[in-house]
Image 1 (tube, rainbow, N blue to C red):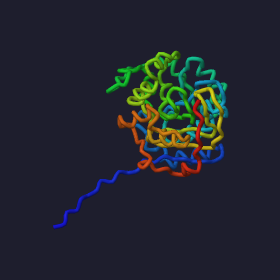
Image 2: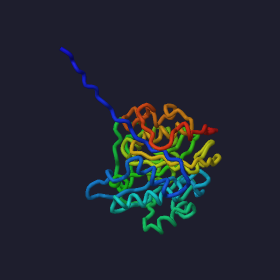
Image 3: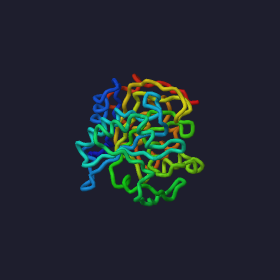
Image 4: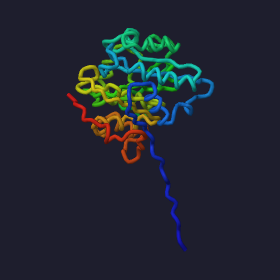
Length: 289
């Protein structure tokens, strides 16, 4: 008698990696290769927020803030799926999000596409979320909007002197509506990022690498023209891939490693399917001051 053992096959986690010129078409390609947005719609509450990175008023070509062109592409694709789309960010310690929206050119894109920019610090309706098995935050208070909508992280490819790399999951730190977030840094910002992503992970991540940033970050450093866009539905896999593009071991980045250990996504290279360009063809060792 021959016993046949059925092997359980685990599907590879797809991450799109597209090298190309700074055009809408390059971003569209990355979004579609990553599976698109169509399966993310949530019943009657069919709305989406696009979370950008406005830690500064500097423009996209400095490598510091999210490229408006990337967001324009996301808006166009999101409108095919969602009844309402918003671009969101909160004030940072030294930056007013409304001012940054104007200075970076993002407000122009919002005006031209008819999409509203929302400063999360001005949202009145808030909700408390309990964090299971918290690293440092047992609960967080955020605008109800970000709990009721599909969350798209429009992040930047950057190094960071505190967390090592600031990508799709670190971008969700800005969902906290307070302006003065320094108190979270005192609690260990890497652990705070893990806690936030336990309850508010991005449903879809796009990492803007048209112009990236190397150095101490997240505002200081040297811009690097990479002509890259990464995208995917697994936030850990996308961030891990972005790390490998910068020749950083994602297991060295606490919040990425812990997010994987908490079941938020895949970090192992052998289990991630890169669609589009090869990492070996585009990677570059980023300086980390």
